[in-house]
Length: 201
Image (cartoon, rainbow, N blue to C red):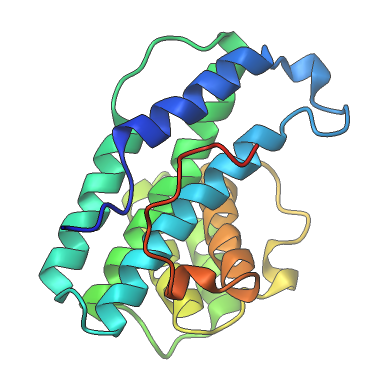
């Protein structure tokens, strides 16, 4: 039986939890108010890392791995009913961060990324590109940064500290989530991907 790395049901379960939370930005300073969004990010990131782990262990070929990442991305970016104005804003932000996750994973699997440039300088160049409204360039650079992080390098904290809010910062949040997942529980490398969706909350 073909392994399912992520399902629409899993994603819909998370969206239901967001709607049930009745999240508002006024609650964002309260303890655990926005925790569900962190859990969603971690869940999707781990699914992507499972795909990479299977590819590295030659359980699935690179083309299939890229296809699986596309499947996960399509689930996440599918249109959905409103969850509430503030929750929708948070989900939109989350999707921006996850866009960097998907692109970073794809770059890593394809092997087509900058392996030599200084990561701190790459982040700086991405910020500069966005400031010049070259969004595609910023996204591309940060996708390469993300691929390097998947390869085992560390996202330089000084490069992301105290940055003003921007699209690049949201993309970096996704890359930071990859880094956090990789230094945390590595059971995704062996997990069979069949656990129930969202039931751990």
